[in-house]
Length: 250
Image (cartoon, rainbow, N blue to C red; front, side):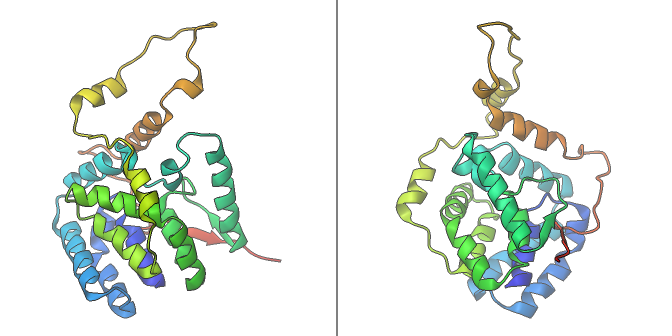
C-alpha cells in the first residue's frame, strides 16, 4: 500500500499547480497497486478530477478554511488529543524519535504530527507496522472524516481510504467524545473578526500569560499567512508531497 499512502498524503497537502499536474501520475500509482476497493477508488477518482479541473485559487481558499482555520479539522493529529497541553511537546518528540528509528529524517517544515507528513512516513516502513500506527489514530481520522462528510466535502474520502488500507475500525465511544467538541464554522465572520481582534497589552501582575492565549488561533494564522497570496506566484517544490531524507546508519 506504499504508493496508495503516498497519493493520499499528496491529496492532503496544500493545492498547487504542481499537484494538479501530478494527477495522472497519482492515478497511475493507484492503478499499479490496486489496493483500494472499487467504491473507495471511485471516490478518490472524483477527488482527482476535482483537483485537476478546479480553479487553483478556489481550491487553495477551501483548503485554508477547512484545515488551517478550523481546529476540529486540523491535520495536526495531536491537536485533537493534547490540544495545547504540555504533554503535546513530549508526544512530538516521541513521534520524531520514531521517524529516526526507521532511518528517516524530517526535512519538511511541518510539525511531526502533520497528517500528510505522517502518511508519507508510513509509506516508507513495513506495511504491518504502518497499519498498526494508523489503527492507533483511527479515532482521530474517523472524527475528521465525519466532520468533513457533514460539510459534504470530498476530502472525507481520503480519510476513509486511509482507514480501509489499515483495516482499522475506530471505537465509537472515543470518536463520539471527539465529536463532542464544539465544531466552529470558519465562514462565521463574527467569530473570525473576534479571533483577529487586537487585545490590550498589559504588564505586571495582571498581564495575560502565554498559557492564557489561544495558541491554536495563532498557529492557524501563522500557517495561513505562509500560503501564497491569491494573485501572487506560489513557490513550487520539486515534489507535490512531503519528503524525507534517509539518514545513514552505522
